[in-house]
Amino acid sequence: MSVVTRFAPSPTGFLHIGGARTALFNWLFTQHHGGKFLLRIEDTDRKRSSQEAVDAILDGLRWLELGWDGEPVYQFAQQARHAEVAHAMLEAGHAYRCYCSPDELTAMREKAKAEKRPIRYDGTWRDRDPSQAPAGVDPVIRLKAPQDGETVIDDLVQGRVTVQNAELDDMVLLRADGTPTYMLSVVVDDHDMGCTHVIRGDDHLNNAFRQAQVFMAMGWDLPVFAHIPLIHGADGAKLSKRHGALGVDAYRDMGFLPEAVRNYLLRLGWGHGDDEIISTAQAIEWFDMDGVGRSASRFDMAKLTNLNGHYLRNTDDARLVDLVVPLLADAHDSVVDEAGRARLLAGMAGLKERAKDLNELAANSVFYVRDGAQPLNDKAEKLLAGDARAHLANMANTFATLEPWTDDALEAAVREAAEAADVKLGKMAQPLRAALTGSNASPSLFEVMRILGRDETLARLRGQT
Picture 1 (cartoon, helix red, strand yellow):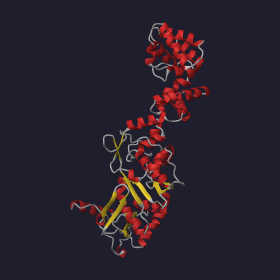
Picture 2 (cartoon, helix red, strand yellow):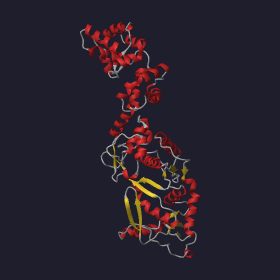
Picture 3 (tube, one colour):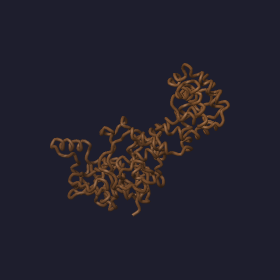
Picture 4 (cartoon, helix red, strand yellow):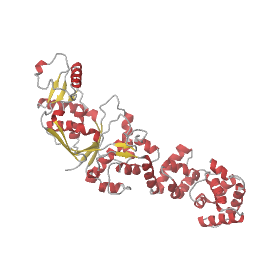
């Protein structure tokens, strides 16, 4: 059997982190088994759906590099097909028309409440002759669900789960206005798209029993279900914005790398021994549903941030330059010219060791792309107090004729100057760092000077004296 999975978000909001993990698990499962990963936009809620949300979902998946096969399927466009299936079930005796009015349904619910029974449709029109239908009432079409026996789901994550059919009522398939319900649409789309596996959050587990009955009524093969536990906050509470339940676009804006987010989401509910750092290639090789646990996962922003730092340190320098240059322009009003890009590339190995996200990396990189005297932060300003500027002037004279312009030669010159001035190395090196970078912290001072070059180093030092 060729595996076909689907990710089916509703475009009523952005692609949130829980949906991203669901998409990832579907994508990895498909990649592992050499199948197809399909995308369906469940846009039947026309009042809450928006093109902006559709665009955000597609953009989020592309950013995460979770490519889907073929064109996205839009559920609303399939309504005629969904209705066709409902009428086919009606003709086959697996569904019936229900003429209950809203008031009758309300009375039914109130009676069930008063008798402390589960609130379910009581089958009023299940076996009645349609000739008894009241005039002028548009009926709904309901599933004629089995009343005896049980419905069983052999779930790849939850195991065998059983519900007594007596606990399920005859759900609505088509509303009185002829529009299909979500429960019908999902089943028809999954069948028509050839989905062999339905991997989704365990909040859909109860839906699976009702949906299975539609599959069986139509004589269609039941897909294999896998209901994965939801994500909670670090405190164990339901995931919310304060925990990090944001749109995927927010993580991109916070400077996270897509591969770091994928790695982190992979480890939320799935494991492979003690492995924490898992490349995409390894994930595809190892991923299967038997590694998914049944307990809710806990989202921890600090762990994601630390993991992102690891990926930054191991990312190709040229790629990081490409990612940082737009941030320098947007957030730091620094347009990077050819010389600035060359400095960035030369200095990236030292810069990325000190950053945990791209925004921090960009902020730490500004001094490489701005020519001349650098604006000083408060700590750098304090480092240039007292005799510091006089020391800078002396060092500038030394650097003017220093050969060769290497890390070792620069360090030797600064040490010699510190000894001659009878000060500790830090008293000479820290003012140099402040004048060259505008900060009290940076990569190796001598690396910075080498990358800036003699002329730029002298210009910055003399600009502060």
